[in-house]
Length: 130
Image (tube, rainbow, N blue to C red; front, side, top):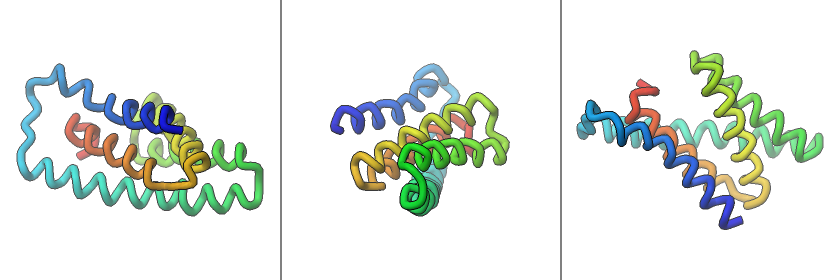
């Protein structure tokens, strides 16, 4: 499990790689505060809805595998409806599958909230969320 948690945080941190090549980034205190607040609220709400409520409900009435697939794909599709590109939607669906698996294996939603928080901060700093 430690390996998968390590891979999860490593994957989440990969969102910061584009920042290494963009000299235009200005981390003002306002941007930092916004990114931290937005990321905490968004990650917590989405994880509670998708990996908390939906995954828990589905795994009680269908197979765990099916519950993981449904929550992962619906998580990606949510972002498609928000105007996220199809490429990122597919990546978010894959992330949703991984997050659901982590919740099942760790029996905790906290790792996925942390992963999600890190990705959101990076997306705000990259200008992908604003």
